[in-house]
Amino acid sequence: GGVLHGGYRNAFGGFGIFEITITGGMDEKISAQWLHVGAMEPRSNHSATFIPPRVAGAERFPEGYLLVVGGNSAGRVTRDVTILDLHTLVWNGTLDDIGSGVEPRSRNSHSATLLRYPHTRGDETQGSFRYGVLVVGGGDGDGTNGSPPHGGEDLTDSWWILGLESGGAVLHWEEACKWSLLTLNAAGRGHVGLRLGPTNSVLAWSGGNPSSACAMVLTGNSWHAVSLASSPGPIPRAFGSSCCLPDGTIVIYGGWNPSGRTFEHFWFGYLGAEAPPTFARLPARTGSANERHPEQASPAVINIDARLLRQLFRERGGTR
Image (cartoon, rainbow, N blue to C red; front, top):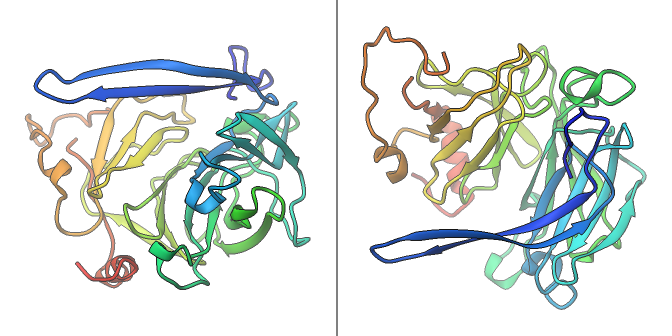
């Protein structure tokens, strides 16, 4: 999916599988190739979350499936859910209203993260945990109100999609939590949304129109405000990319500000008081303390209060 040249009315109706291979040794080499290109319903500004075989059910989905949620199709915002079987590479239909009779507003430019569902307990190695996809924020701009970047409203709620092990047969929505833009202007359209390492929490930063520098952590069915421990930090933005490395280093790249600026910088951050190895290896930035902001700065450090830090790391069996 995505959009072709010509704006948000021109959604793309194709998908591709891209393989990256890294060979080790002294002469490390990186190669890449397209393995498959196929067709899909034209859609943009949706989320696509990998559901692994251990969650999806390895007998029915030996390579897992891709859960596609929301976005814009035919110029209108939607809450449709579609599944791509990664073994057969066949789409398993479109589900408009999934289960339970309670559904969120249609949305695009949101985040959707696979997590353990907070109302279950068990030993993950024995497969007794229940999993869900947490869909957070976004917006509802479409062809009727000005398109995703500028139109519609920023949404202030999060929802679970449950029943992942059914492969779409009994998927259903369940509301997680809400917040107010007056309290915390975070997780709007195009925000950065990522799982924080091995925890069961999602960091949502920036996004919205106008874009905000606010951040929040969503844990279970609650949210907590997050503060930056260093200044200056990244300029507020939407539609950037991000990931959390295995050692807990947060990486943010690019993005766009509603003022019209597109960013090209990488930013690195971490949660807590001690820098993880990747962050610690970053080269020191040189120059005057009064030097212009690089997007105009040293890596940004994302910090939260000690009480929340303990809560996050308790979920993996200890404190730090």
